[in-house]
Length: 194
Ligand SMILES: [Fe+2]
Image 1 (cartoon, rainbow, N blue to C red):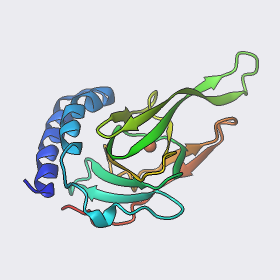
Image 2 (image 1 turned 120 degrees about the vertical axis):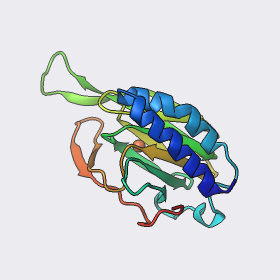
Image 3 (image 1 turned 135 degrees about the vertical axis):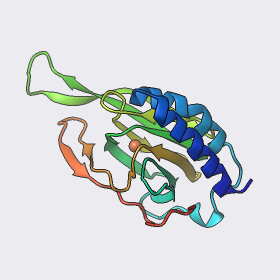
């Protein structure tokens, strides 16, 4: 099978899950085994899309159906590249295709002493290596940051329940809980596979 066939087969499984699952947590749980099979396929990413930029991660649209029920996105993380603390406001899964990344999870915390003191608290930081999968869904599992602290380029494949390149969402400051609205467009409008 060629790469496009793998994405088309995966789309069938995703649509079945979306018909049957009742919550965003169920969606990510039920998509996980199909996503695992997808990200373990060789040759999904053309070599020309694996080259990192100097200053920031690359974000390419890999596959998106016409109705935008979901999008599959490719991220290329050069050494030291970081995605600051952000949410998604939609379900999503992140799989490591090559290399490794570090992911830190946060939760919103209110101070007992001062009701105005809202900040983000770190839940945990994990290293994700080739074939590892993590997921996000609002409201309680949605805020994280990602970085590549290693010397090799990391490549990750993500799926979200909308076109994440158009999604209005937020970045955060950890100490003050200052919220900034963001949209992070893809570098390409036409998917690599369609
Ligand atoms: Fe994210």
